[in-house]
Image 1 (cartoon, rainbow, N blue to C red):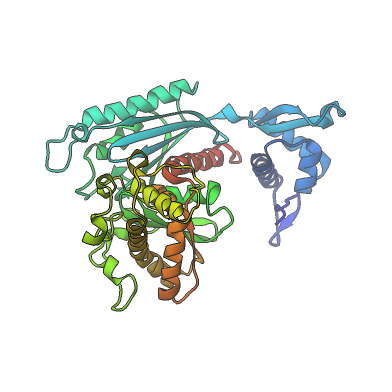
Image 2 (image 1 turned 90 degrees about the horizontal axis):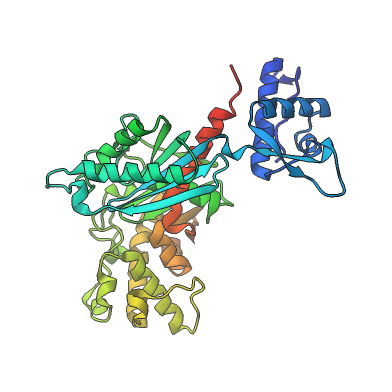
Length: 436
């Protein structure tokens, strides 16, 4: 689809656009093209926008004067002079930050205005440092450590203060009050104080988002859903959840509960192939479906039965592929430093996990009919195509509509990447906005 063209003095919708409005729209159009293409000459801008050469020359001068674009090179050795100059967005015009807040870890990323990573760091947080539910809150040490991590990463990136900070966190959140994990007993108490501390340290715009929603943004822009305008991301991480993208836009529900579709229990109807695995499944054991029956447990390595569920999925996938004489295309070793998992136990594990996941996919498909569901976060990537195929087979028998199931490809970095992406969008929207 070609970009919209607005000429000074033209008409749109029966109304004549004022010169200032036309200039603002043309500026935004040129900036959007530069963001997408990277570098363009005046001639290329003229061709892509359909604007006249004098109009393009004016907007280039205007955007250069505002330090939004600059000359970044020349089109080729055979061409010289003004017509060969390549223009690009000034990447260091502003800096962005993304924060991925987990129950036991904080990861931060500082990027430029184009979203390119300049510095990244991660810090484990001991459970007692944040005050676990039922224990005296010891939030300040954990909060201080997280803020210090962000401060040092900003400094390593050569920045002073981010223009916009995106924060992704599990559980319930309220973007108005800045409360993370409100009314949630299973999240550490230091989450509730982190946003206020970041706001106090940095005079930046702060955006809060649920981790499932940010994973969906990352998969849409960078991962498995790049060719889809409508899809649902099924969060298979530390809590069950889902994020909905319709017509290219992330759709949110009530602020306090968005992304937490797994907060309700699901039960399959009698006779459903997933009935046995779905009974009693809830957010308390989202990635540990009741597939560890005595038959499977006796043959499964003890470490695979622990809480490191992505590792258990990777081990199962590796065992299944090896049993077929296939090589795991991801090049990932199995659980336990190469410990071999019996193929029968691995098949049973993946089948039961797929039974459980298919309940959520079927419910979403029946209500929204997105056409595509992405198994997101670490578990979705660890299960890969093996898990996605099993889920799709079960959904085909259970759902009234056809739904493609894909494995997420961004994995554990999805929340952090999504946080940077929403910060980039907000910063560009503010900096590229027409002057009043």
